[in-house]
Length: 179
Image (cartoon, rainbow, N blue to C red; front, side, top):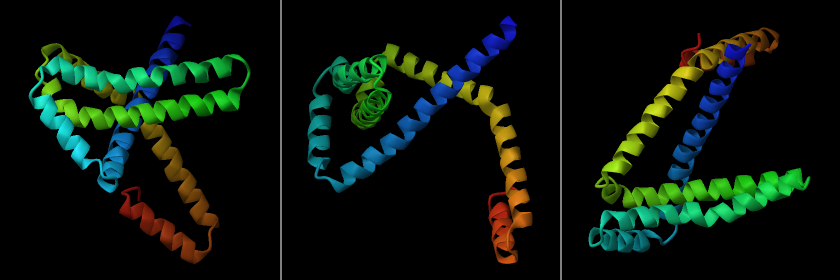
């Protein structure tokens, strides 16, 4: 029984970590696109020129600011949840998490060169990357099972679909390497 709960806990932890990593990747890319649209390039260049002249610990402080700035909003979301306002709490928490991750990913891109001069930061980053690889390995059996289920569902829906749609589904499956 203990093994079952331990396995369930570690699987849930791996899934949560991968969701966080996925959000980091997606929101970092989204922030890069937003920055490209907004006139934030001068700000980025100014921050980078300031960072070159400062110690690497200043880059870490700059990197930590968005995390700390969003923290009260996360607590507000949790307080709303605790008081029974589930929809409001989830929205506030998710919005704070999303904005926080996006801004932190943007600031990380600016500070990354200086942060890599901090040995403890590099070790922490390497540990997080190893943790991400572990999470992927933990989730691999479930991903394979979900892909198999999806393939069977697509095949089943293809049998009931009109002929033109069946051809399109087959072409899609072949393009994705599922058939």
